[in-house]
Image (cartoon, rainbow, N blue to C red; front, side, top):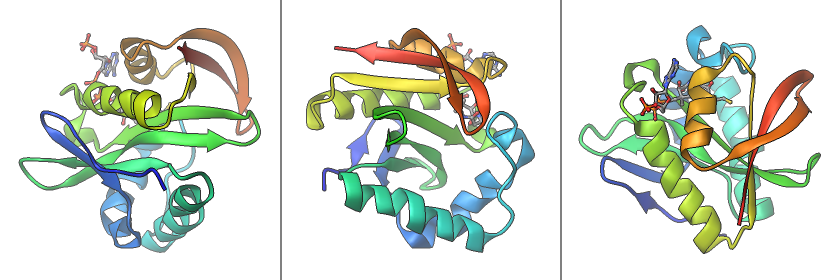
Length: 168
Ligand SMILES: CC(C)(COP(=O)(O)OP(=O)(O)OC[C@H]1O[C@@H](n2cnc3c(N)ncnc32)[C@H](O)[C@@H]1OP(=O)(O)O)[C@@H](O)C(=O)NCCC(=O)NCCS
C-alpha cells in the first residue's frame, strides 16, 4: 500500500475512511458538482458503498487511489483528488472533485500538483492521463496547469470525452 498523506501549503490529502461518507455525500449529492460527471449520488449509504467498493478497493487492489482533500485551517473534508487505475484503458487517471464553496481558490491545482508529484516520485509512474467532457472548462484548465497535454478522444462511461496525457 503506497497511500501516504500529502501536505501542501493549504491542504492535507489523506486516504479515505468509510466514516467520510457523510462529508463526501454533501459534495457528491450536488447537481452542480456532478454536472459533467453523472447523476448526483442520492444517499450517504450510496456514498459509503462507493467508498468501500471503489476507493478503498483500489487501495487494496492497486496500492493507491483517490485521496480525501482536507482544508488545513478549517479541518473540513472539501472533496477528493487523486489517482485511479482504469483497467479498461490500462492507464492511471488523475481526478478531482471539490465542494462548490471551495471553487476558484486554486485548491484543485494545488492538490493536483501534489498528486502528480506523488505519482511520479512515490509510484514511479511515467504516464498519467486525465479525462473531461469538452464543456468542463474548469477541469480542462486544471489538467493543463498540471502539465497534461491534449491526447485525442476517449469513450468514458458512455460519453465521448477529451483525453489528456502527461508523459515523463
Ligand atoms: C474542476 C474543479 C475541481 C476545479 O476546482 P478549482 O479549485 O476551482 O480549480 P482552480 O481554482 O485550481 O482553477 C484552475 C484554473 O481553472 C480556471 N477555472 C476554474 N473554474 C473555472 C470555470 N468555471 N470556468 C473557466 N475556468 C475556470 C481558473 O481560472 C484557474 O486558472 P487560473 O489560476 O489561471 O485563474 C471544480 O470546478 C469541481 O469540483 N468541479 C466539479 C467536479 C468536476 O467536474 N471534476 C472534474 C471531472 S473531469
